[in-house]
Image (cartoon, rainbow, N blue to C red; front, side, top):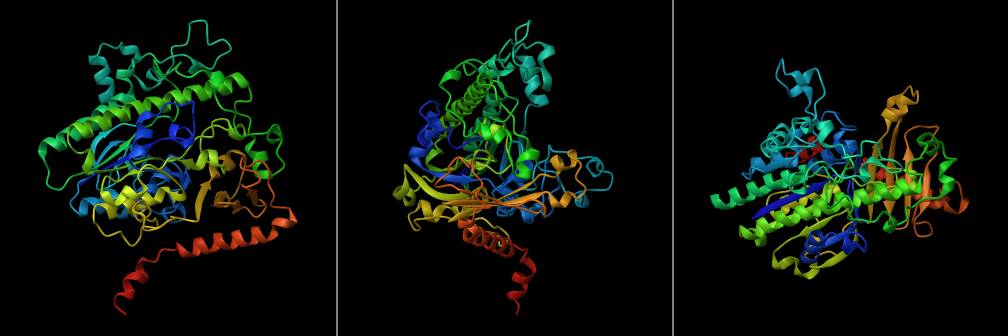
Length: 492
């Protein structure tokens, strides 16, 4: 039995062919969905990358991990998925990156990470097969061996598009191709390292199988595509974003402070989208190579595959780019699971319209491997749904976003006030703020699927607002740290 857990970075669920997007080309992920099941309502629990990935690997909400920002240390990292797998004898491998900052209290005296924040660490329990976020010294050495000029072999240079000497003109820089070939991209190199691992595991013929976490930085910035991806998509064919010109002068104080104004220019909007689509297809093409290696090694029918992302990308929705904030565009992620066993045949090839959270991956992996799900995990395995034992997974999702860095820049005094909680069900989305001067936001998703109109102040929604606020409070109460009492209960 094997597990291949794939996380892309900043990947939108609607940028998949089988999700109804007739412009984008994702044949390999579409095939994975056809041989497994794809959830339409997958949501991450936090942003940016570091907080989200700590939620994913610990199977805990951010209110539990308290890793609220990039470089925020994670306490109790030994209680995350990789250490549980290691303790059970699985020796999980990592290709790519973790975005994990260790708790300085567990570091040995003199460790430089007690004095500075670092990001390039592996969670305990992982075998560091190949560590690579945007690039790596190993990658640059490989490019050097391939004959690339020394001037290109740095982080800033390799990720710069090949803009004409006289400038980009009316275009965004990402309209132009990268200076490397597709087979030499960092995406291809990460895939090569994952393929090496798959082949080595196959040649060792391990009795027990293995677990591999593969992490791609794309389609996260830097926004750059090599040929043939840079002009694969006509900017004119890009779908319209979810936005209204009224959002350029918002009335709600949070949205006014956010001051959304990205990609107002129509040409730049479409070029940004076309580049993003190209990066998505590059990831998909490389996944096709990885899937082929699994098949060639005879491991395809013994491997649970989960494909998802740490968060999504607004892609011009609400005049925003990037992740975080409160809209579906930044929160709604792909969630595809292929369980090769006959028990999953009942949902094979289906697109499941039920909620799933990013924290559900770790318990799914543990259950599939036949290991007990740790008491501290707050997620829920999706296997009962895949096996037809349950018709629905979750009725709602929870999400948190700590925006203190932006608030600091605007002169805020109390950092701990700058947090939002989001509760989303099929009909409504509630956004509640810790700041007592920040009123809630409420969207009626049935009438307003693009989240353009805040109805929190409308009297007809008062009952809904109260009910969802109570549900938020109940959710938070339910997810207090119960470890000590759960232990005590065994002895009472």
